[in-house]
Length: 178
Image (cartoon, rainbow, N blue to C red; front, side, top):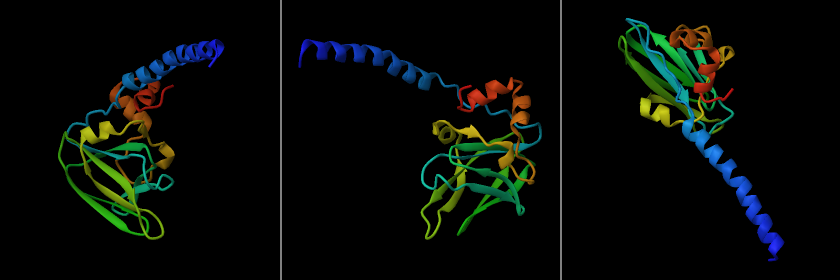
């Protein structure tokens, strides 16, 4: 290799090293998703769907036969609920059910993943933890258009109001830099 090729390689490494460092720093300093406390006397469930298999399929979370919200890959939503037993369903070629006992002033987590099915992916909804939710990087809140007529799912502006923060901050903390 000639001197010029070494010099170009050194310049390329010098230019790309700060860019790599900036990207790494950006990933490390990304703010965590802000989840408001549930309203007094009510509980809440954070439903989320990490990426993975069945990327094009959504998990439509239903309660009492009504759609609460759809979860595309990399999305989450927060549902406020009365204390007591709640039963959620998701289905495609198969149906899966999750029953949760919601307690006042408590936040629970539930994840929906898509497993391999015969013709189409099969939804799998199950309880989760805050730690697992926090491990799922780049989650974004579902759009209001993805929410159904079922009660409880907080719209983005309701989350913003509950947090007492500007809308841009909520969007940024949800993993999408603005």
